[in-house]
Length: 58
Image 1 (cartoon, rainbow, N blue to C red):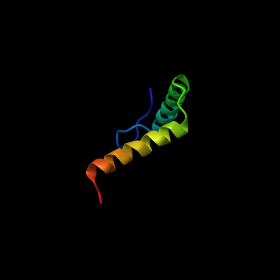
Image 2: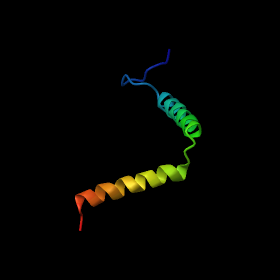
Image 3: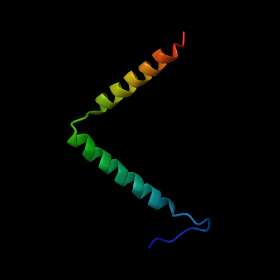
């Protein structure tokens, strides 16, 4: 059981540990689905291009 700080929350180490666990899970999912970092980048670029083209910001 972890100790709580004075404000009632968990220590900063607990949040850091959750972040590390999340990154490890994401790494395994990326390897399982054979996705590269550039694929993720291109997906976000195409998403934003689609959004901005629908908004018609001329």
